[in-house]
Image 1 (cartoon, one colour):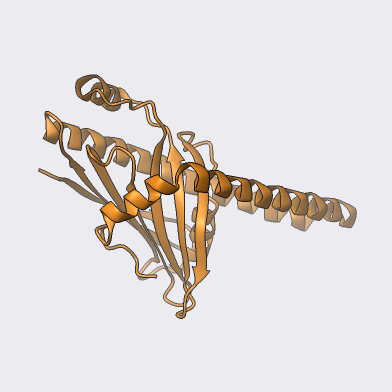
Image 2: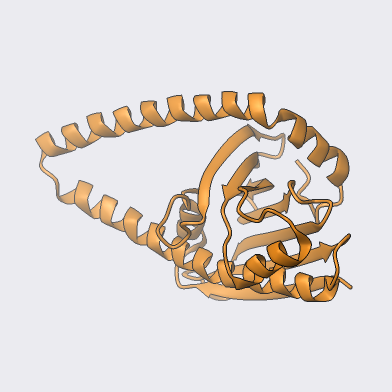
Length: 236
C-alpha cells in the first residue's frame, strides 16, 4: 500500500509576492525543524527558467515517529536530508518544487511536490497545489507507518504556509522601514545589508565545502536510486 494525498491552499497575495517569500522561506519561526538549506546547483536554462537543486536538512520529532523508532529500531533523531529540485518560470508564472528524502530510503520514501500559480480569476491571489507520495518497505505495519508519515507531512505543510505568511510580513516591514528611513539611516542599512550578504555568501561557500566532504557519496547514491522517479520531477 502507498500513502497518497493532495491538498490545495489559496494565499491572499499576488504570485510574485508569494514566490519571493517561498524563495526566502527559511529560516522562519513556523518551521523550527528545518535546520539548514544548501544550494548546490542553480542556473538559468535556455527557456529563461531558474532551475535549482538544494539540500534541505531537518529534525523531526512527534508521537508517530517515536513509535516508528521503537518498533522499527530506526534512529529517528538523526537529521533528515532531502534533495529538492525547483523550476521558477517567470514567463509562465509558475514555481514548481519536487523533493525526496535520501536517508532512510531503504525503509521510507517521501516524495513531495508543490506548485505555486496565480489564481485563475483573481490576480491578487495565488494557488498552492501540494501532494505527497509515501512508501514504506522492510518494516512491519507498513500501512500504519505510511499513514503516520503522511499525517506528519501534512501537519508540517500547514506550518510551512504560515511560514510563507511570516516572510511576506517581514518583507513588507522591510520595504516600509526603508521607505520611511532618513538618508543616513538608509546608507547605514545598505552597508549592513552588504555585510550580511557577504557573510551569507561565505557561509554558503562553507556549507558547500562541507556538503562535498560529508554528503557527496550519499547524494550520488540518492540520485542513482531516484533517477527520474521523483514525482513529476521538473525538467531542467
